[in-house]
Length: 357
Image (cartoon, rainbow, N blue to C red; front, side, top):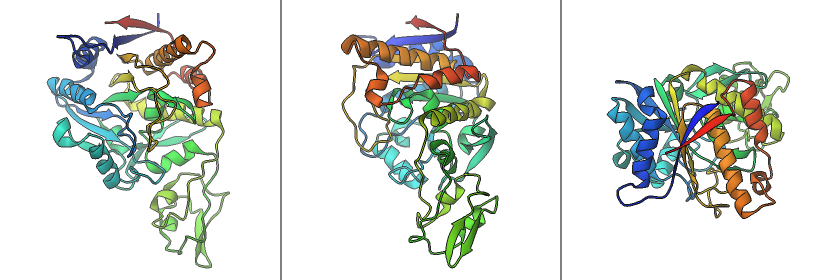
């Protein structure tokens, strides 16, 4: 039978707006059964990069906040800092960007908490699988009583598509943990930028870094690619290494997502918006035109069923316009492997029942 995936379209009518439909969707899909009186509820979303104009409308989040409050929960909006240095690499810049994009506390009616703290070093370790022995989950997400995952489904030129798996597998991970997912390559010091301050030496738990002739040096054989040194360096002398293998990154994302959800069994709810579907992630500081028109909103408690349904609906609508094309023709990467691997490690079911409301 597969997991139940509830769906509403985006056609509002007199007396039944899209916001009304969103309320009905969440209630039918079981949000009211997940949230209990007194719960601290992390609403995980992507605040969008500064300059991106395809981020989710704040009105959608406000409805979800209201529904959580009606159940007696205490919601907060959250995301983790980025590995790259743009508008969200520390909590101050991140909150400023979120406010600019419309997600400010006064308007939303819920606080914003950057899950991995001021500089991205506030995390809890969670066990993962083969490629990742452990992941660094943002503390506010790890410690929350309940988790509502609000996802903007779109393409992604690194892993094929950005959905729930990307939202949690990368977005719920603290800054240093993102390096191990992005690349199998270990960090190397850019000596021209290093002043030998020693902060990286202090933070290295495996003692892989030493100061030699006034410059930091990373012993590659001892380095465990934890990424803490990248985050702590005040001079950005340890740059991100973006070298990657597509399938390896996809596999790590899935393993990371599963690790994030490991302590949230029966305590998580998922809402995915198939709107403003471009070929690129909301991490871009610009937004291209959507590749197809808006489709609808999906919700439920099985993340993989929702992810598969989202992928199928987007692909179906692409083929209706471009019969010879699929989503991966726009992104350059086939994301199906993530769905296949996710099922093998028990993230959910790829079989689903699409229930239209």
